[in-house]
Length: 119
Image (cartoon, rainbow, N blue to C red; front, side, top):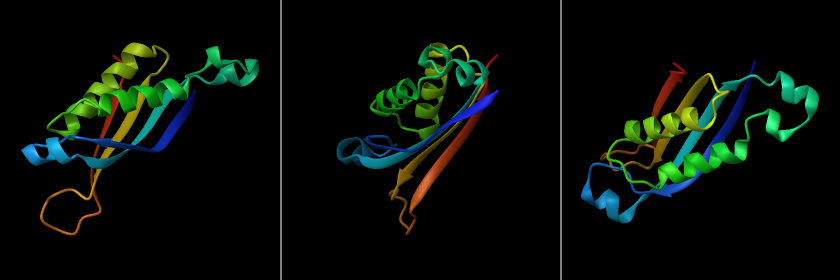
């Protein structure tokens, strides 16, 4: 088994419960970790024998472009889509961070993290 990590995927998205957040948007970062079997690709040196991290990044970017009120909701969509698209993945850890959230304080980021296992 092995782990593939995509760290600090940056997007500009429109998530949030306030109407203004849907209009002005905000900066976000996403950290993704997937568990899969890397033994075959470590021997074959073929992309088709591993999880393509270009596809992982594409899924994150596309789902982050769809407005959600809650970060938990967009994270769930990302996780569900990855499991549906890439059967070899057995576990996902995903963190979605809103940079400079409008919460009335000096906060660098607010982050939700979810961990899911394939059924």
